[in-house]
Image (cartoon, rainbow over all chains, first blue to last red):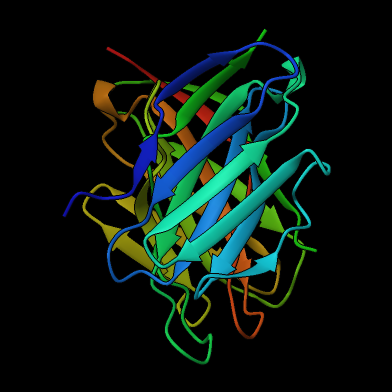
Length: 118
Length: 114
């Protein structure tokens, strides 16, 4: 099992540029989560998908952030335009959610993308 | 929404001693409480979890207790070792129908001194 795969692992960009982060969840998982981690704000949930459908994007900081999940094996998080305050580690996580929502399944995190916006 | 508070923010213990980290949550609908360990520069990894239908769970040197009435849960690590040094996060998840999300505590930096 390759686990959750994220790319790139590191990204350095200049303010105003578009940034696209990519995630491949564990095969068979049907829930995908995007988190942002900073020293000041800790681990924040940005958005999550269930069966490729966005369920809650209330954590997305502002309209500069967007996320898509075109199929069960791929998701992107895009920042356009990027700003220095977006610098953080972005984690993708996936889990398998059984029908009915009675059980919370383990979320497995990817290695993260360390983003630096200059 | 759910709010999770975690204490202490830093904890230093001597090797072989026990460490206890405590969390409180606000949403009485939360029914799942995982604990994650994050080593420096690495991803968070699940170390133990507990569901609301049990009060305690143990896995070797790690145990978690849950008090639903008081809405708090704790992580206990016994016989600590230097490799236990890391940041530990608690989380809570309410049942919300079609999907589940975790709200994380702010983390505890545990340092085990040799």
